[in-house]
Amino acid sequence: MKDSLLLRSIRGEKIERFPVWLMRQAGRYMKEYRELREKERDFLSFCKNVELAVKVSLLPLELLDVDAVIIFSDILIPLEPMGVCIEFKEGEGPVISWDRDVKALKRISYKDTDFVNEVIKGVKEAQKDVPVIGFCGGPFTLLSYLIEGRGGKDMKDTKIFMWKQEDYHALMSLLVDNLIEYLKGQILAGADLVQIFDSWAMYLPYEDYRDYAETYLKKLLEGIKREFNVPIIYFYRGSGSFLEAIKDLPVDVISVDWTVDMLGGMRSVHRAFQGNLDPHVLYADEETIFKKTLELLRCVPRKTKYIFNLGHGLMPDMEFNKVKFLVNAVKSFYIA
Image (cartoon, rainbow, N blue to C red; front, side):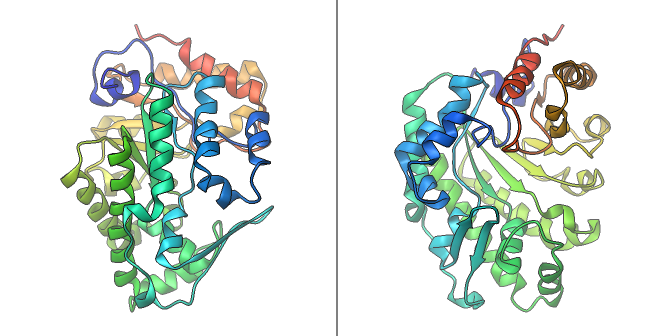
């Protein structure tokens, strides 16, 4: 596995082409996913069904021939054993409820979410060709779900909670400790690398990100690096100015959305990069998909420290054939 295309690219070694995998690469745009999803009553039960989650995780490898498998799960999974109620409602996404008593929330063990670890073991047993990616949410992103009760809002309540500071630091410290434990279980189970999703950091001004969120993100990263020698990918959405805040964090790969000047960042931030293609390209025709994909790849410096991905996850209404076309387009681009 050390010699996999993706891990060699992260290390900056010679590669013949850029590795490719896609966020939400196993999802509702696949009929095979939808068929497996019908076997469980709700999304949370689906995530906890190890046999089904292993099969879903492997679908992109079987159908798209990607260069990495990210396990099928959800960033909210570690909140439940903390004492938080999570419901996934059709058409609404996750709804989170708890009694708002920070002191009542629990420290967790990685054994509390052992089904996630079993999914990793199952994926590793089923294939030996590509790395397996474990993941978690960033501390601020999970905090925002706890305070807002759902995702995708303007984060007004989260910001007020953060600025008041009464319970902010206690809650963020607990989240960090629990996320370290959560990722520990995944790495011990065999994850070759991990990705941290900080999807809602985009709602913070640069100064607040630096003063409030980055401190705890750094504690999470340092906690993992102290115990394990695995590459870490950090995905965030939002302004390229955040690159200045995160450039010295102990991460191996910075994954960016399509609004960031990634190519400019490559000149000043000495990390591997991932992503940057606007996912809406997949709603265009194949000629446009090919053109936009190759335009990006041609501009990436030939240092090889790059992983192709979209700037965000695949959407349910995207066409499978176009996703497959995209993957093939990336794999057709050889580095001179």
